[in-house]
Image (cartoon, rainbow, N blue to C red; front, top):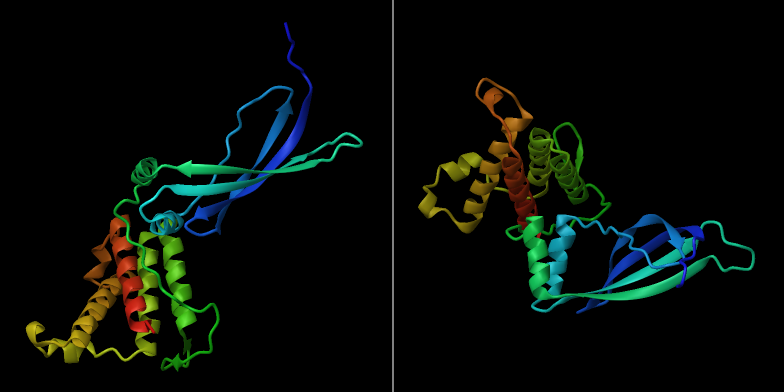
Length: 245
């Protein structure tokens, strides 16, 4: 009868996840795991956190095939004995069949999500100013949009909608959108494509103003997650449409 070793050693496991097909690219890191090494095989759980955007991006890149991933792992002994190299690295290939991947997406609730990509610079020289002299730029609009998304994730529904109003205010100073009055003067069926887009812009702007300003009409408004998500999606779509190159 072989007796199991009782020796143990504390260690730290780090790593990263890479996509291998159809292209090789970094996805995310593996959350660090503190574990205890033993003289026999044990099971440890590794956690990989992905946002909805990352899940949807993987789905788009995957195409019609399986999802093929590569885990690059690094284990480090926290108290290595003299003469023992404390670090070891390894790679593990993982293939997630297409059917299983779709089940994962379904469980995550992303099967009906739509990803809107808005190309905005991180920094940019201001290209417009309001009456008070406040600078406006595409990078500012993008920063406000990211702020609204963060507020949505923090369950700040009304604040997210109010921040979307700020995005549209910046956008309105950057691009030439026909005025609401000029659009309203034209019957809907006779409006040009630009005028119809302007009507959408002003309708969304009017909705967001309810969270940005409070009066006798809007003070009774309540905001849910689905409403905040809808407003954020409309705002992102308008920003993408009016700033497309």
